[in-house]
Length: 507
Image (cartoon, rainbow, N blue to C red; front, top):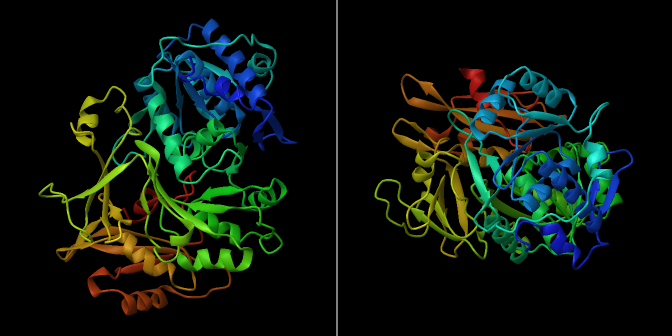
């Protein structure tokens, strides 16, 4: 019985293969698949001794590290459900999410923010058991080094049972918890395999493991296929460049802001990145000048990807050969994904080059939102199509392009304005390092654009320079009414620009 017990199955083939390098320890800790499997069995046995059964939730509030993988694989063996919480949320928000998902046990790391959250939760009468991962008096290290390593399986587990609850970004109110089934995990692995990851690859993960991009975009599929994960605790540009060279990393993924930060690192010029087969960019279109700089200076080529928590997350891929000629495209659907564009008003499927909402169908879709049937019904149709909330179009050759999130589009003087279109023009400016555009209220036009940018080192352009550039390159109604130059952008743990924080600046 191997549904959920991925490590034990992997050990049938490559028990002594290098599975994990945890850079959160000094020196980094290395694990084979057999060693990871023993750790997972020990934790599963301990969780079982604490009364954790199939369907019970086990929480995690921690910076990235081996403990996430211990918990994921241990829960898989038991049929329990891992619930990783975003430690960047306010403790009150996390408490509300805990009340909704009711984990029986929560592991937490003792770094400042997670420990602050744990201290807050410990004062609540309805809090679950809180288990520290480090520090004096904790038992975790003893559990995974000295515990009972007898194999653990859940005979009644099926592919439709939930493996993980992952919280969505949430545009209004608290994030929703997407139910990620074991079936979704496996079909996502298949989509990754056919989109060019190999069991011989070595992947450097910098994304938070409480996000789909961190846990499932490459990491779990790579381990299932027998590759190696190199796991950071947080994103440090200088460290990333050093590790790519030192560990002969073959795949690295990030968002455009991360790739810009790497170029600005002190050791960029001296770094050898020749081990990379490719870099994967996601979260936003990768600026062509940035791709060209990587290729010209380091010989690095790019693929573009697209995914979301509720589906995959490996949904679309743009190949290396298309990365420049189809710049801005998310590519074509991965092998086991069906995609279509639907008119927002008529709900009819649109023709090529017509913008509408992107809908997806396939076996890597979520099972629904945890204990939220109304929210599930709002996005999942009876025929299996999932509403992404993304505006997109498909060209004549079958390549898809994301135009904008429905929630980010604004109407100015009766015209639809897509911030992503303005941002694409801004990124072509030689002085712009990062940018983001939002809609703000205006008495005359309803909404107008406001652009936020950061400048590349040594550049002296002011707001008027940027506005004139936009007027020279955009239709008048698309030109933002104002530009604000920031010292730094508000960035999420996944490396994306936080438009919610930018909106607070003008509220």
